[in-house]
Length: 445
Image 1 (cartoon, rainbow, N blue to C red):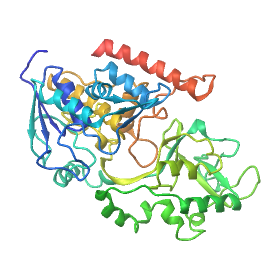
Image 2 (cartoon, rainbow, N blue to C red):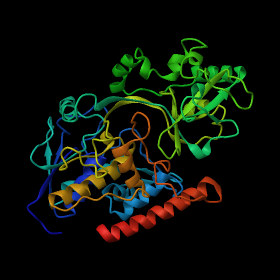
Image 3 (cartoon, rainbow, N blue to C red):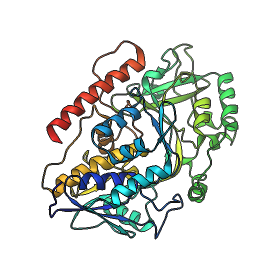
Image 4 (cartoon, rainbow, N blue to C red):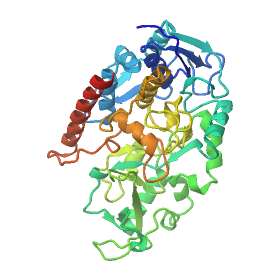
């Protein structure tokens, strides 16, 4: 490692910020890392250490047939600090990677605080730093002052303070013997997939939905959730259902203008699925934003005809989550369009999950270092998970932009069919992605 006179400012020492700082410093560039703990904490935090895991100690699957598992292997190849910490603090968890939270955060904190090129300043940043290369990785609970400045930077309505999202399912896991493509009154090019219900199916689904268990809200979500109950556009589907047995049939499940090709008649009720990307590899359950527990979502939404064996790429969520409406504002390098020396990383960009946040921090850190060194930033191949997430953040899908976990639905398609089902397809995607990443590393890193 050689020292140079270039410097980068990083705001936030969560998973994304710590990873970004590490990647910058390992390239010989000095880092000033701002972290408001221990002087100030969000309601979600309890430790003064860096890289604190708030909601869970699980980093999800290790299997290569899962996009989260593939992303972990990508990060290991890219010398990720977060993956090194996770592997060093792992605890038995079957096919998943779970960690000892204390050991995990201690590992990260030690590496950052003892790095000769990283200077830590325990101070809240209230405005975006100017006249420097900078990475903002302040997280989904960004302080009000900084969030306000970020909102001003991007313009009105470009920063969301609440995440209300419906579940997303893998297109290949749908039952096309039941699901049919049609737009209402045949307007459009059959842009929606439809899951028809007869009366008995609807009533059984309705009873299951209104009786399902809701997820517990964090204290810092509770007050904001009250406001959502009167905002029709963000109302949880289970709350809407409790208004009356036919409320959903006149709302998100209205069957008007649809004809079930099996019966030739209008269904009693219908759940519509809207494509989340132009490749139509994943679909959103229209109007089904929810804060049911994940297990309950799988159970209840699995009662919808055509979704019996659906693979959920993302479950519905409703919680405080400050994030940028990134498409058109953030480049696939994680640099902002209007100020290329300013980068954002972590959940604020629209990636969802611990490992995903770390991956965005790694990519933003690499490119911030390159910018400081007057080198061209890198755009990773979309056949990789890390590259596909960056592409999703910069472009979005076909509907309203929503944060997204790593999943095979956003990765560049194979371009050919694979025998052996979903597992074989995912293995092929893994091999293609790893070959592309190894080639990319050899040529650029």
